[in-house]
Amino acid sequence: QVQLVESGGGLVQAGGSLRLACAASGRTLAAYDMAWFRRAPGKEREFVAGISWNGGSIYYSDSVKGRFTASRDNTKNSVYLQMHSLKPEDTAVYYCAATLDRDDWYSAPWAVTYDYWGQGTQVTVSS
Image (cartoon, rainbow, N blue to C red):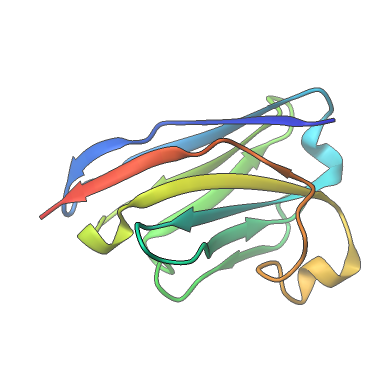
């Protein structure tokens, strides 16, 4: 079992920055491909970013590309999402998710089934 705990959310003005962290316990994250998703009120869950087990492959949704950066530190069993130039439409609950490294993840990290999810952290961007 892997337990994931997100942190770093909060209230920020448009144009501001936040850094989310996802800390894992139970097992090492080094074997897991990771992703960040978000869910805004009244909307479906949306893929934000994915990072492979060694950080060698990183994917972003078009809506955050150029503004968000995913990274990981397997020695700290953590993944991160640095968010810059935040917009009100980025307001959502952000979740991290983990799946054991798999070939199909590299084709569509937004589409695979993730084995573990965190409880989420709220990000609110005011205009």
